[in-house]
View 1 (cartoon, rainbow over the protein chains, first blue to last red):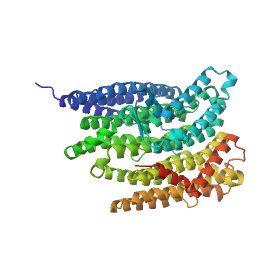
View 2: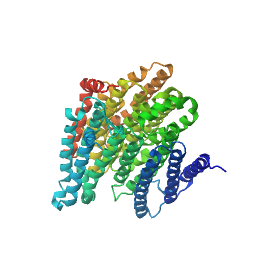
View 3: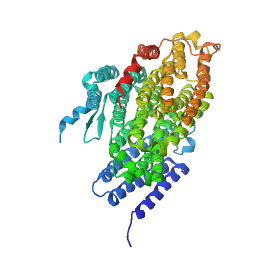
View 4: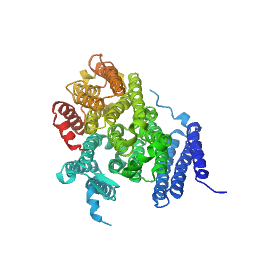
Length: 103
Length: 486
């Protein structure tokens, strides 16, 4: 059996959609952050697979992935810090309680 | 490697040096020295802004470096200078706030984060490779999240920051997904290479291309807060400290708009009519209309300006549609005028908030009786945002509409007509503020007479001078038009 490009692209697309679904339905901010990580990792898979299968002559996609991973780590660190701050002042990290500012 | 190509990045490198100076003096200065960090930053940044106008920096034609990953030209230097002027005003206006009791321990951090985001925006506008662009985008939006959370003792600040960081990460994930499809289609991340291979790809893979473009446009739309990606805007603008809100609404939005223009035309310009013409029309109509309709019913002034800035972003997008030198010049002129008008409004709001913490529209009833100067400044800002003739806002809208209409299709006429009708609607809610200040009687909630700090007054004077000067003197627009050479 040949492993073609589709065997990678379809799972990564499913991962991305799971991430979007989780981001929209989950109410806990940590769970939302995990969903965001899913989305970002799906993107990384995409870049690597396109590079490996379609354009193996240069490494552009691989390098982009390396940078994307680093950026995702920075984003997560900052988001966790902010969520901790929210928890300190509200004693809760559910987004349904983040609705003090209406009007 | 040829190290002399770093000389192309004069502004970026001097900004980094400026950042390091501020950072080191903040780290090693004594407690007394810390008090001067704000003033020091303002002076250094003022010098840096002047340095941007030197002929050495502006150069005479397009220069690329790092095998085409970085590009600078007189037009790019011009937009950077416009943003610098805006940042300088924001810095001056925020001096009083950073010196206040709660912020005093960490006041240096505000300036450091702000300079870093500006560096990211420079990369966003100068990058000609998507890796550079994405790093710039993240460098611009991550420190901003920390700045939104800056008021440690106010719950709203944290709530706003949480909303901002979650939507920012979501939007960059969507943008990256779009970029991965673009990479899969074309095999490169250089703007130029993508545009070259777009020509052959456009006929065979048009569906794939439209999907990729939809991802890219929605990812960037989050940054520009276009409808339907605007839901974070109102809450973040309301919860963030006023200085950060003003920064977010003018500088961040202006740089994102310029980067959007560069990406759409340099990368996807080939497939304009097949792929994204109608996408952009729909976005513009939705953004202008919905921003306007929601602005009408806001009572909190920061929230009100958030929705007004959403509809202003729609007008900025009209400049992107006009694909010619005039469109780009009109977009830059619009950003310049928008910086002055919005910063004047935020200057007044910030001064009043620093003094007595009031931000509601009802607190402004009869403001003219108690604080006439602030009321007149606010009135000028509102007139300019609404686009009433002698002031700058009229001309910026005029140029934007003209550049769009130059395209000459029926669809664009309809689009501009809808935008014009929306200008009239916007007149209503901008004048609501003016009416509250000048016609309504004062009551017990009205802001009491007070004297604003010298720095706040300087910021407002500069903004008022800008609103009047840009409206009455045509030199600014002419020089922008001459600088933009396609």
